[in-house]
Image (cartoon, rainbow, N blue to C red; front, side):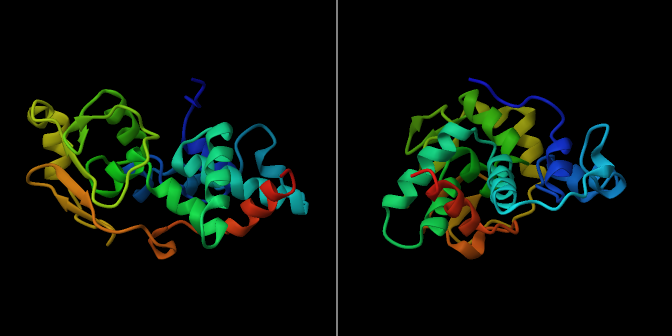
Length: 210
């Protein structure tokens, strides 16, 4: 499946704000957003043209796609799913995105970034309710228990994750770093999203083509 494999810092610069795609680097002075806070490319510094209504909506959608690391087709699928759910469509969309396995692994502190979480899931390091799941887009539910496979717990990667755990997990998940496991105890809420997102703009964009 096609996926962006270039420098992820370019994605932050294109959106004009940190998307925290590089874990620890994003919090240091080495972050390119601190030194080159303008769009990438030859004419990046000259991009001052005011965006149209469509352009503003598109940039918001692209920001969310890059934040969660998903392509356009899955993004549309999630929107259609959220649109059929009870409640506010935009908040439903974020709730669905938060329930992806790669995001849950990251939220539990079992990976330093969503990019790393996706890689670890694909390599088959995690169990969901005792069964191996290697699909990053797998949608989890309240009550699901996610844990690192017993064999994988001995790897240097997870030892490093344990030693550098920050312990700042959101309220909707429980994390047990000693046993490298966690549980989803509630649905995520809008307040759990720590990135400035105007989800109503995404809904307006997709609603035009319904």
